[in-house]
Image 1: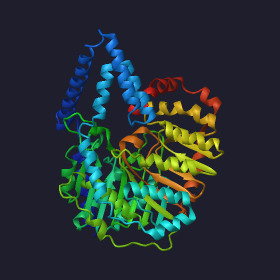
Image 2: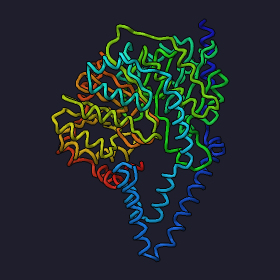
Image 3: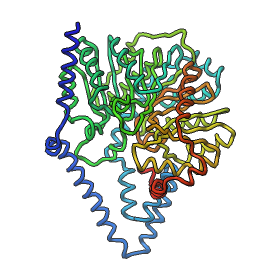
Image 4: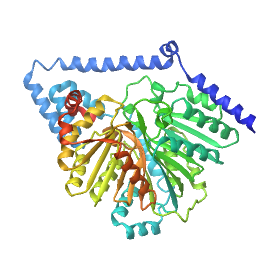
Length: 528
């Protein structure tokens, strides 16, 4: 048995070695050609915009009229207020160029087909998991506000509320990784993984060794990752490499030689489902920095949860919805074949939900705002980024002004300069309203957590920024009355004790460069 395990592990290590690429192989690879063609198309597009712009500067009146028409058009569009202001600024500064750029992005070139597929997929799978009226009524009796939120989630995305589900909270990526390995070893029927980032290293190597061994024993193993991994962490032929191990694999929206707004929509989800009865989600990707095996930005603080029981079925469906987006014959039979998995002693309610950026219904943001608006005592939040639209900022401010203890934990060591600077632009408004802000001194916070009043929480992949709230495929789990909520709150307090507090004084003495970057970039924040 040990010899067989060693053979499979060597097989996985060979795959990892084959995946690494040198500079010359990258320069002369298919990916390099694709990037070159993309760059040429971008130059042609922007050159065309500039060429067309040269026809109007000689006719000032026409330019002014054109700008007024575009501004009126923008004001009557369905964009959010922040997005309108950004585009109006761009159009006022560069009337023709800005207008053509706006029309190009709003035309959704290459994205309409995706939107149609997603709409059809959600509609067709709406009956795969039926909500239990008795569970809904029980939730309504315990918390009418949470029941109303549950109604909204189920109405807009087939996201029913479940009981009989045990929830385990992991305050660090290392803890999640340990449990992942244990649960993967128990798989008998299928293993589904959908992650934004997969990177070769210790974490992925150990997981891959188990996946290869399970696939060889007949377990249905499928791996899905975002197509941007082809630019940073994985070679383009990685699906072929995994298929040699018996693992089905595909990237979401792989990079192609054609300029398209499709690239704006990324699969930011982190989902692992085992046999339909166990599911993981949270902020932890499959890369070594997430388990602090390597250090990039100080200590990496991340969180995750494991669901065992009925609610895991929803994550199975979420995975299959994404997996089947480009399949000619979509197959969701796995969901109906999952044996009912009850954990009768489990307390509370769980609602797994996914957010699609193409349906114009910002479900992730609505859940956050709903929690803020219903909070009575406190809302404690961890997020790596803080690039807010008007609605979310107003909800944070309103909750604090009502006397709710609103606290935000943000990174002390940033991973990206510009988002870090943009977060700073919100500090003054939030501090003035009474929101407390702490920056995690030991390093980088990547957790996406809301916990409220000792009775409800959200753990998932959804950041407090435009990318997550508007442009990414996301997922999370809403928890109501679940025992581990106390652990989430306790973890928040422990993390808070390691933060540098931001006061009015420290804000005024803040880094000038950070303030300057944020001030300059603020008008175009929705475009970042």
